[in-house]
Image (cartoon, rainbow, N blue to C red; front, side):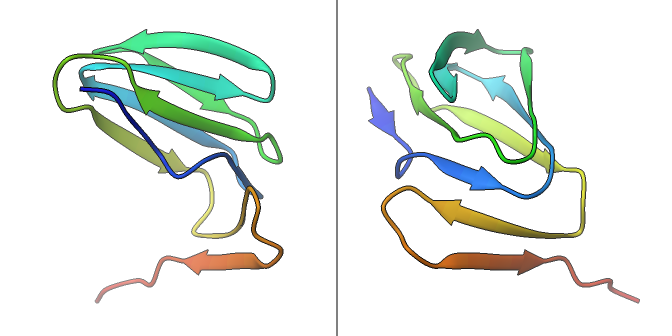
Length: 89
């Protein structure tokens, strides 16, 4: 099974992408790496990045962002998307 996320994106916050289960091709700008279960990649802020499933099973990934508020730019989209995490009491 090969699937791909919806293209590259760029964030204003540093992030880590961890493979919880499966195998993926992950790219940072023009560099590509294959990452497998238990491996992580640090994505610096402002870097175009993305991933696709290169394994035969469902890919499970975890993303951790270094800021509760960030902006994301998606490849091919002119507008910036703003995201934030709200605190729960």
